[in-house]
Structure formats: C-alpha cells, structure tokens
Image 1 (cartoon, rainbow, N blue to C red):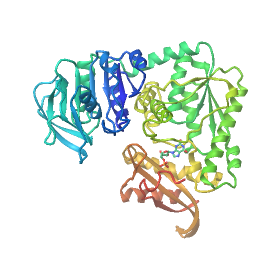
Image 2: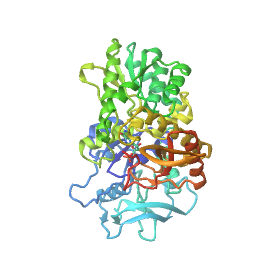
Image 3: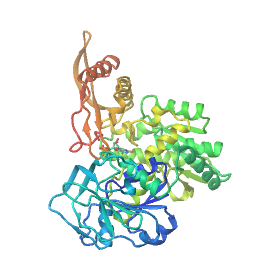
Image 4: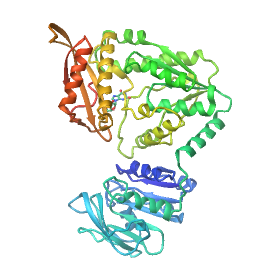
Length: 510
Ligand code: XMP
C-alpha cells in the first residue's frame, strides 16, 4: 500500500483515485501527520502531493524526515519535487509567471520511472508558480521542457523521484503509466485492491465488528446508503434493519422502486415509513428556502429517531460516509487545506440513542462505491444516477411546498430524465432536473385556454459541482421535452430552459 502526503493540492484526491485504479490501496495523510502514524501505516511507497504554496513562504509545509528514513520509494509531484530538492540542497525559486496548462516534456536518458513509456516527448499538465532553479547534487534530471531543464528528476542512488508536472491529471497523456511504474514497478505493490477483494474484506470486517448484534440504516434511495445496505446485507443478512422515510419529495415513483429493489429483489429488511402527510403539513405556509431545508432535516431526524426507539434491540447505526467526506472533514477540523464543501446532509441523531457507529464505505471513493454497488447486484442505472439533494423536491419547488406541486414536478422531471436517457444525453450531463415555479401563465392547448404553472428545465455539466456550465442541449431535444411536458401534464402551461452557469447561479434554484 501507498501513502500520499497531502500538501494541499487540489489534485491530491485525484492521485489517490489513480493509485486505487491501479489496484493498489492508498490513503491520504496531512503533510504534518505524526511520524508514528506514518510509520504505523507501513507504506511500500510514499507520494508527496503538489501544493499551492511556495516552499519559501512563511509556515510553508515542510518535509517530515521520517518519509526518507523509511527507506521506501518516494515520488514528489510538483511541490513535492520542490521539497525533495530543497531538502537535498537544491535551489527552488519563485517565478513571476505561473506555468499553467499543457507543456511538452522531453525525456532525457533512461529513468526507471519512465520504463513503461516508449516515446521521447510527452504532453503533460503543468500547474505551478515556483520551480527548481538548481538541482540538488544528489539528483540528476530525467526530463526537460523549453522553460526548465528540470521537469523531472531522480536520485542518483535511492529510489526517489520528482516530477514537476501532474501525472494524476487526465491531460497528462502517459500519467497512468508513470504512476503504474512507480507503484507496481518501483514500490513493488501487488494488484490486490479489486472490487471482489474489497467486498470480501469488508464483509469479513463487518461480521467481526458487529457479531450477532443488530444494525439500523437510514435508506434514502441514494447511491451511498443503497450500497451500504447491499454490503451490510451480504455481511449480516437479517441483522440489518433499514428505515426508508417516504417524504413525498422523492423522484417519480422512487418510493416504490426502492422497495422493489431493496426489499423484494434483494430481500433486505426495509421498513417503509409513509411520512408524506407529515412533510406536507410541516412545510405548509413556509416559503423561506433555509427554513424549508431545516424543517425537512428535522422531520427526518424525528421520524428516524422514533423508528429507532420502536426497534429496541438495535446496537449499531450505519452511515454512508465515504472517503472524500472523511478527508474533507479532517481538513476542515485541523483548519488546513481549504474546506472544499460543507454540504447540508441530513444527519445527526441525539446522543441518548447511544448507538455504535458503523461506516463501511469510509475508505472508498465514489467511483469505488459505485463499482461495489454494481458487484453487489444494484442496477447500474441506479448506481450511476445524477446526484439528488437531501431535501429532495423540497428545494426544487420554489416557495411553499404543496402535494399538488410535488406531484406535478415529479412527473415533469420524469419525462425530462426519460428523454435524456433515450437520447443518450443523460451521461453527458452531470445533473439534470426540473424545477417547479408556482407562477401561472396563459397558454393554448388544443383549442382550450390553459392558465397554469411553469416548469423550468435545468441541466449542467461539471466535474466537482463547485462550478458548472449549463448544458448546451440540442434545441430539438428541448423542444421535444417541452411538448411532452405540456401535453401530458395538465398543470403546466409553459416550459423554460435555465441558461445560467455556476457561478453566479447555483445548480439548485433554492
Ligand atoms: P448548488 O445548488 O449548491 O448545488 O450549486 C451543488 C450540488 O449540491 C447539491 N445540493 C444538495 N445536496 N442537500 C444535499 O444533499 C442539500 O441541501 C443540497 N443543496 C444542493 C445539488 O443537487 C448539487 O449537486
């Protein structure tokens, strides 16, 4: 297994995902992690990530010497390479111009790091301010570009390497081969991290941890909780009890689908709580977006808590926490890397429930969770679905939420999604949905005048959901969806398409 030390680069998680894709287990630790923790991890190799800072800045992250004392191969990426150079007596200098984007790298001589590459020039991705001005005497250069003679380097005796560019980024053409050579060829890591092995290990661990006790899980219909359910079911069968709260704010017929898949097909213990009335009553008269979110979240906890109390022999609470959540909350709690996202998931149960917490996905990335889900028998269309916000249709009905609005919206959304899938556009958008506008407008359908509501269609393309561009769907396609919605749903007289990107708009309308 490989340890990745995080110096704050936006690409650190990507390095970890790439290493995992090479079937090698890895974890990310902060650059200033305890030496004891680093040793205890027993890495077969260490990767030092990039970082936004300059090595000369005050309080710049430094290299913990334990990294070099373990006598395992080390690869420094960008800032990581600069740190290695500085440590061995080289010169790192800030430059006025940041280099950002594609660069052509020429490989010089024979380096073990490039053993899987049989060309002399590579297109790589650069993103740095500082660069190595004079190489440490212990190193020699193994690649250059037109702007630097030191685009990559290798220690003359030890298996220590540095690359100024980013092999983990898709734009670096042979990045995968470079990382593979490092983890397999140089560190000697075997390809043990595979979906089947992951399932076996997790099943064994869960059985060991839980024994004969019972586990409670809040099933939302989303990917993470569904995969947790499938995994726990495989491990402990009927000792798992799932509670599925039907809020009335779910996607079209989602409640029935969850029951069909989880309860009927997979034979998982699921209690379906019909809480629609409670939600519509609770939301009556409320049109403030933040208060709506709060009401929805609090109701969920209250209902879930009641269920938990009714089932009196439960000892464990399962949650669908995944690895990026763990990394992000660790980063924010130490105040180190920039907090990337603090999202509003429903969670938090009162302490007096006194349940032990089990989070079986907490060392997995989202793509790994999805693969696991498919291997465990969940439908790929479900596992690869667009994200759906915790408060559901509650934040897609502007202003006050009413059952009539929710039903209309669910139908319109269903038509949109169905057509996206039919036209092979679903996977080309990152998130797509309909929004209900409680505004009436006039239309003519057939010979009759219609005075009804507006549906807005929203579709975006994004990598990280922090910024997004509105999807340029074909006009003919939007036309088709618009016609279907107005023809098939009486309560709609007009369909509009949202052409706002994020920023300045957000993806959701509330
Ligand atoms: P925004 O609207 O902030 O959305 O651009 C970014 C992503 O987050 C999702 N989202 C939520 N997810 N609870 C959630 O679990 C929420 O309250 C919530 N609000 C937004 C949104 O769907 C998009 O994917």
